[in-house]
Length: 91
View 1: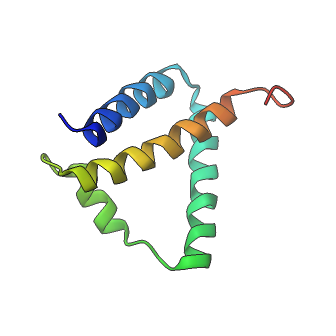
View 2 (view 1 turned 90 degrees about the vertical axis):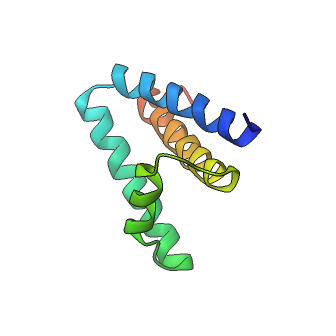
């Protein structure tokens, strides 16, 4: 198993645990922060086709480059989840 795939698998596992422990309100706040994050990126660099992202998430086999992209995305998710779950002032 490649390093990229191992990283992706670890982040999926961790994000699943974090989502399971999060409240509905925390998950909603994470979605809002990620939407703003995406809007900022799109304003600066251009649109990211949603269909391509969905296709990557739904594919059954991935290569190292795709695993790296997915791992990078899940890393952002985990960072935002940690930020939302951490009380203000505890950062």
